[in-house]
Length: 195
Image 1 (tube, rainbow, N blue to C red):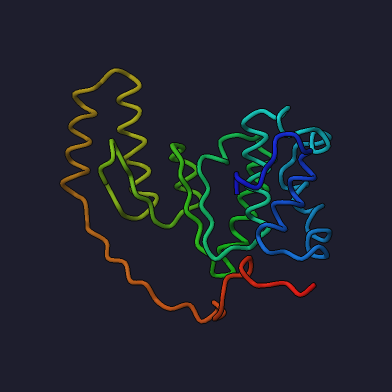
Image 2: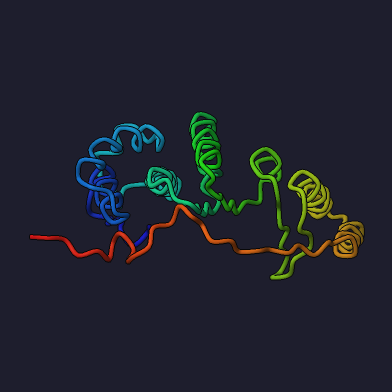
């Protein structure tokens, strides 16, 4: 998604390019444009070049474009930490809609409360190692307690909490099933277009 966004173009021009790059038709792009702009919630800045955007504004626009594609799998890396409460509420509603349509959302976040509220399963990573993998609420609570101890300088207690979490870890198994919704043939972006 980042590769499709061009810093010298406006946000709205980048929305159009991003949606076209994801295989939307020009008609679909025009239909989706107002929805993407509303979800991003960056106001009149949508008409300014992206090089004038803060990193948070850019993240919000990237999330809005990606969510409009209605992907089977959506990866969100800290995007929800960059907005106000209105953006957060809109983006959470959008993620709920995506999940209801049998989509999968991977959320990368240090915000334990966000993980508790939006996820069903969480994986706590620390220095490249899986500490916990389990129900989101339980995992986020343990992570929150550990991080609170770290923030308060209680490193010995935090180390103990980390060791206990590792001991309690349950190994999850993952099975890949064929998705009957996936069409056979080349990806949309690889299809030849008649001239």
